[in-house]
Image (cartoon, rainbow, N blue to C red; front, side, top):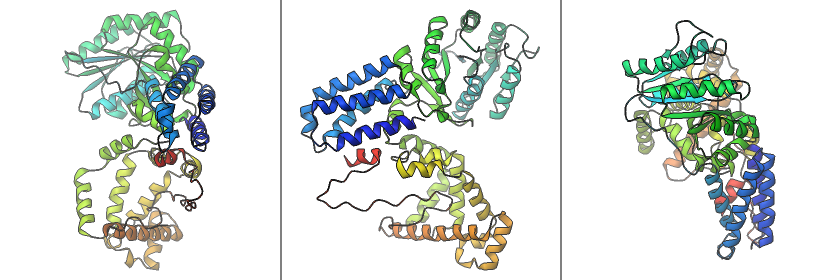
Length: 479
């Protein structure tokens, strides 16, 4: 998401950095570029205008101080980063926990926003934190909505309270009340109520949602909105805020939106924070919305904090500790170690998404690498390694021609693919050995097996010329 906006922000700052000392006229130009980029990305015009006015005012006020620094453009960059974080909500907003269990969460939104799928993701998220959530099927309007929620619940291992009558029959208000009571009796500490949606905002939808709200007195009302809808998402949010009310917003389908204007508009327009964001189809593609991390990604600086959290959750602490001890003792890195790391990486989800969180990976040659990355390469790599004997995984030097042919046949791959994996792994072993000796990473070393090969770094520019990276994140770091 935000690909277009990231690219345009990068272009604007590239122009600013090339000017050295910054004048008021330079501020006017970059503010205009930012405003155009925001509007093109579906950000509401009034939001774009206020955002750029605030940036201009702060930049002009700080101009003397900024120009005394080594890199004046970095001062303006920081102002934009701070304002972008503020417009996204400032800080992460967490669920309010009820004083008396269960905590009741009601979700509202239009049909097609992904409310039912979101219910499963939220339940999965809460379950992984040690909670005992219950899903309540109060959407009796849409055909098969109850069945869909039951399937979603089964897929994440969370029980569903549903009316015995089945789909399209019954009183949604009564079901919501009964579901809450059931949760109290069975000691579920979270209740997630699935409500009906419509293709558009209407009085009947608002009335039913209001009745459910009054019947269950939820601790949180979350408005679920499809980020791909653009400016219409903000209009719909305002209608629900007036008709039913809500406490926070959940953005879905962020992975499919290259513009992302809704995320930048909705907080300013409704005064309500974004609490969660769904970034894919899998249950785990869901997390708290961190404004500062999103601002960092938009400005091309990546999201290392989220990547670190995902890695911590995926990698077994004991296995990681043993690998660290092995590395420190100087023992050789083997394909057994690599297979364990590869399997942990697979738990983290999409490789292209993970790599996209690194600074500078969403622009230029790196972006093309990510776009062309074949996710199934990890599966093929794993199949090749698993087709080896324990002896072969411990020592790749024993892999002669006949062994490689056998491995290729057993994994369903070709001998050249096996050879390529082994060659890249041997290169990775050499890299590990040099790092163990304190020599740093050797220049030109191949990527780890199963990982995309990264483009070579540009040659150093002679000192008499100004070195300006084509990568907005790298330029920020150079500053």
